[in-house]
Amino acid sequence: MKAGVSTVAMGLAALAAGASISGRVIAHGNVTPQAVDTSALPDIGEEWLKHNPYRGNATAIKIGEGAYGQNCARCHGLEAISGGIAPDLRYLEVGDSGDEWFIQRYQHGSARDGKVYMPPMGEVLGQKAGWAIRAWLETKHTDS
Image (cartoon, rainbow, N blue to C red; front, side, top):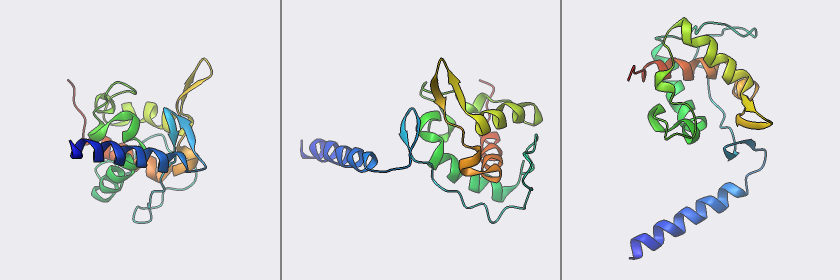
C-alpha cells in the first residue's frame, strides 16, 4: 500500500512543479518547450527547406530522438506510438513525400475552430531541430 501512496505523492509533486513553470505553449495542456542543442549538425541556413537535409544522418537521428522525447512525446506518444491524443507519427510517409506535411505542422501547428491541437514549434525550436526530429521519426516508420 505504501508504494501506491508514494507513487500518487510523486505524481502530485510533479504536477505541482509543472504548474509553476512559466512561458508555456498551450496545446494539450500546459507545455514548456525544451531547447534542443543542434550545434553538432551541419548548418542549413535560415530559409525553411522543403526536404529533410538530415535524412539518414546518425547524429541528427540521435538529436532528434532526444528532441522528440522532450517536446513531442507528451502528445504523440513514447517512441512515436500515439495513445490517441495526437496523430501516430510512425505512419507518416517516409522520404520527401512526408516532409511537406511534417514541416508545415511543425512550423505552423494545427488549429480547428479556434482550438490549438498542436502549437507551432518552428520558431521555438528551429529548423535544425525539426529536421532532426523528422530524421528520427523515419527510423520509427511502420505501414501497419
